[in-house]
Length: 586
Image (cartoon, rainbow, N blue to C red; front, top):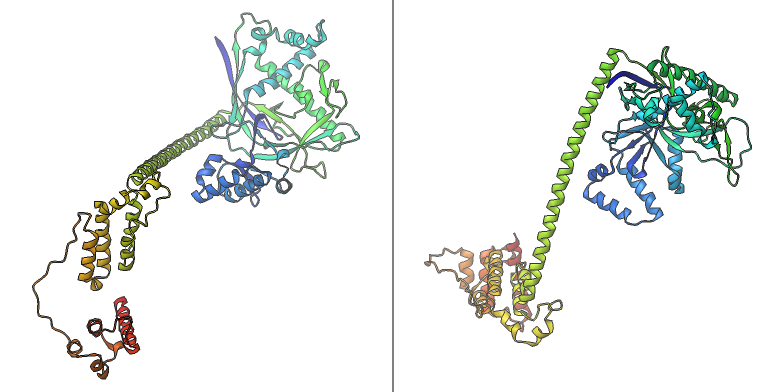
């Protein structure tokens, strides 16, 4: 099957919006006031950029589910997403003020930003081939009708279909445009996006009874260039009327050139002046939304445009539109100077150098896209591994919890054993052991009543595990305070362990060595009674630890540690004991 393919470029001459059914969700963009840009980002990427604490905070706000919480969500995103990278669209100061007022007044349902057509893989903008084909078809139909203005007889409701079939040689496979293949047109350079308002102006003065809604659009800014191909399949079988590149270009110049002059004059009549500048040799074309009903319907004398007359009024059917749509940076423009029509562009064939430059741009864009995909793949894999690890930790924790509960059911003393391991002094150790097993909490035990009434509770004291826990705790205390550990404490531990079958290892006696005592210690040992010590020149606060301990031992021999003794003995005992503790801390 023979065909002819030509490369074309489309240069945008006025704001262009091609609907795609997508909007900028408030949870997927942030407004940067200083730069005057809207940054659209991946909500999942935003969540992953948050710390665990911030993520929990965001989750808590989302769970509220109230109107006020929506404002909290937007405030949180606007505060935390300022560093996010993504699609950028230029904003006006009026739009930023409108956005702030919307948040303040909580009119969330009335704030939608409709996106123009974009590639969901890399967010790059493009012009769908179907949009271009529709414009070409309209122009060719009008061009052929002017050459042969024939209105088919028959049912008025089916006249349009019959008319198109007559002009294009039939319907479906016999239609001239069934042999026309148009690719999507993609960027050949960086493209600027803008956020604008759609302003609908009446062509003739009317009494306005209500303020019309003002839609918000993302548009392709004037100056953007896109490139694609148009192919005509050279097949003659069954084709009555063929279409050629020459006819298409002639039809575009004739139809859209005339429409541009007509609308420019109508706009000027209502005080809106603008100029659509295209380079010499370039072909006019109009695309996208709000480009005027006359530019998207055919044929001139057979147009049937439905005009909505307002609430409660029946619509009218006319052969022309009664309003013109303009793009504005302000919701309520004070003048018409900055208003621009939607959708004007020019079509032309690029040079070989321009085609090469476009291919190079798309190559780099693809490399960037591939890199982004790889980064996303790696990120998703890391997230998957993290989720897997978290689930495994949760599973292990749950398993350990169940095992612990099962063990507690069989061995209710286990929490007591764990608490015993935290003790590091003799007083608490002694109290904990002597209160066992009465101190064990049995409130959560399934057999609490029977355990309290049975002799099983007394069996716990004989448990080997209880004995081993006592040994570990006693060794810990002995290590912390070795100088206070004496034979009396060894005997106490042995007594505690008597029924458990666990032994307490006593220190092995080493061969006695000749101890060389200081002169002070020797003097203290030589005192026969307390009176001799009091008559000596010793000051308790000047004694070293060794001398103080020996003195305490002598005071014990003299009965100073008893409760019912004279006040002077109690005083000196307390003074020596406090001095020893002070020295031990040092």
